[in-house]
Image (tube, rainbow, N blue to C red; front, side):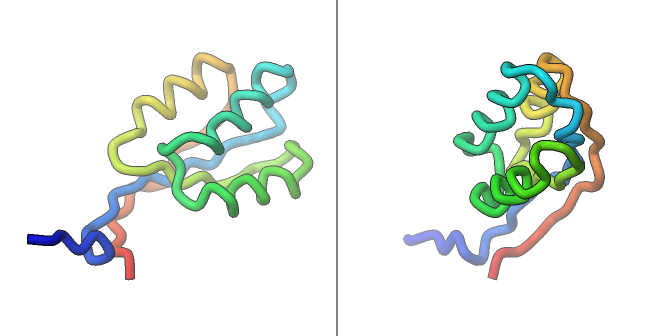
Length: 93
């Protein structure tokens, strides 16, 4: 039996990250490293939003299935300001 993942629910949380709070080289590297991580939905679009703000502004980041704790601990450990916006249950088309 083949599972059709396009009709499976996608649980995600939306975080607003203040990229202006990332002032050190390590913090900026952490934001870049997150873009290579499987925790983030729409990585390319998110990276372009961060890049277009010049790493000074607020960017919404969609965090994938049950990765909230890991994402929050990385943000706290690196001292990057964030706020959890909402939890969603989205069905991918």
